[in-house]
Length: 118
Length: 114
Image 1: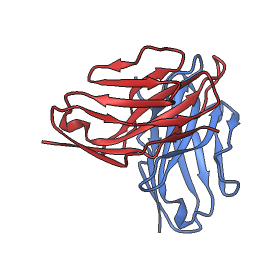
Image 2: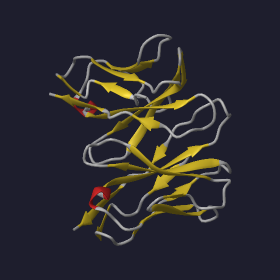
Image 3: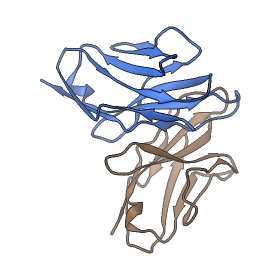
Image 4: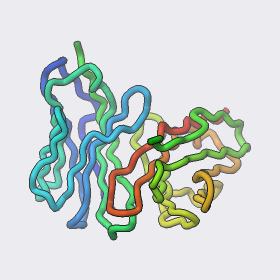
């Protein structure tokens, strides 16, 4: 079974600054996917960024980037130039790779509540 | 292109009643997942379905809970004889058939048990 750990229940950052959210996971799988989802006060679940474990290059989406360390089983999210709209709960999630035509469950961490202060 | 549609957004039931939660996946998506989020917690997997098949129900409570995804119509998560502990947000997600694509989530159904 896989586990995902987010050790920072709450974090805060000043607008325009950079913040890094931590995530570690435990798995015996070699091929898998990692995700960060954002849940704002509206409670929607919004995909922020995705990383394939077989890719060494860290994923980047505009102001969001990850630091993926496969050997250490670490997957942190960096948010640059923080904006007020980034205030949300952030969940790290793991999904093991299966056959091309199959799906697989997501295993979530407990979340980090990020507050961006003006 | 409509996203994952869940209804109702809010559902109030009294203890002992039945709750039915509906989920229509995104167009072209044939995989449906249900997750439960208890207050102040992360999302926990419940069940994974494809059309007319339950693929993985290892996260589903053994009693009172059932799920289906019929050939026609939305996926249904059914909770019989609800109890206070069933109060939670229930999220549905869908993904396409080919390749391990990210799951797209609906807005959730907030179930409150009186």
